[in-house]
Amino acid sequence: MYQIDFQKPIHVHFIGIGGISMSGLAELLLSRHFKVSGSDSKAGDLTRHLSALGATVYIGQSAGNLTDDIDLVVYTAAISKDNPEWNAALEKGIPMLTRAQLLGQLMKNYQTPINIAGTHGKTTTTSMVSEILIHAGCDPTLSLGGILKSVGGNLRIGHSEYFVAEACEYTNSYHSFFPRISLILNIEEDHLDFFRDITEIRASFRKFMELLPADGALIINGMIDNVAELTADLPCPVITYGDESVYDYYPTDIRFDEMGRGCYTLHHGDESYEVKLGVVGIHNVYNSLAAIALAEYLGIGREHILAALQSFTGTDRRFEKKGEIGGVTILDDYAHHPTEIRATLTAAKNYPHQKLWCVFQPHTYTRTKAFLDEFADALSLADAVILTDIYAAREQNTVGITSRDLLAKLQAKGGETHYFSYFDDIENFLLLQAHPGDVVITMGAGDVVQIGEHLLGK
Image (cartoon, rainbow, N blue to C red; front, side, top):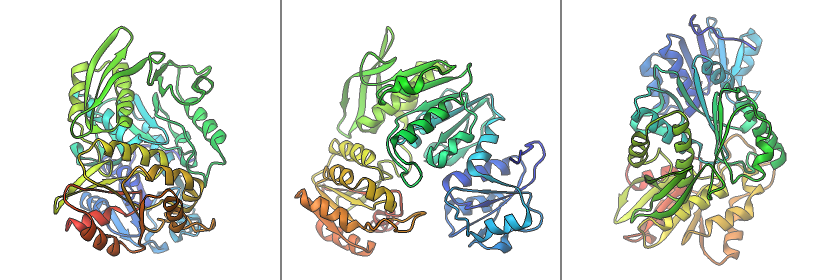
């Protein structure tokens, strides 16, 4: 594998530079005086930001974008092997690294790399940890999977020992990392276009845990099935959190205020104290437990932890309030797995509303087919569901599934369900049917967010 000498800047080209993670890595290299170029299928805020910083960004991908002075090409798992730039790099003999391999090599430059993994909740928990570290004056470097308002983007370049990054299990990319501390939020079936089943997923997470050194630590959700089997014989300390006193950290007296924000009593050993959150939902109670366990392991003072968690109001596309139109509140959420949908809609039950509308865009054909019944069960928590077509992402429809299959499942449950192929039709329908006091949540990992933004005139 090609090894970067970060003391000797080179020219790095990113295939897919506009992605949330790739753009952050590109900016980090720019800060280290590397020459950066890259391409993406369309322009956006992130590509424009990189251009303003001095990167050369091509809109559209072609072999001609690979100039002769490029020393290294970085690509994502989403790049197909018929990509013209991928093939041009092969023909030219340019060294190539995956996004994960580059991120792993960057981690080696820091004394305390912190990785946050799990099927759900990575971006929110990484953001909670980030807010705590910033509030405590730790000056961390951050690589986020979403936009954190307090840092004005998905990257923060610090000057301390701390490097905080999300660690995604898809294609086993986190096996390329070098964590000193890892936090694992949950382990469930997902990405079944890559993993065979939950057994293979658990084996992947175990291999990730084995990357930890003896002087590191693992913080893990103790409610994961057979967690002791996963953590057996690790060389480092294992810290657990969960819903009862058998775990190192646990909450009692969980309650929610008039806006659905969580509050609870945290217990750790003989100590207990009140925690107030600026985000909604029971799932964020447990995300905050994980963040607190990590912060206390790092020796951060309680006053910084509590202040940071209370002021943290979430990242973009995580129960994000987009605005109001005609007395109707528009929210947006990235949820695209049944567990995430259930968590978000359960949280919405505690949020002020008359009628709860969920506009859901399924994400990938394989996920929709694998969890069809689970999607129907979770979505039925809304008062009314509006479905649009499946967002294909990296896939072709080789499994013969459409949103109409999910529509039939929801209709069989007897709830109010609608289907529209075009976003314009959904927007017009909501303008007629949603009334003052209602809440509309656009939901999914694709471009469904555009519906709410169009309604609000953004």
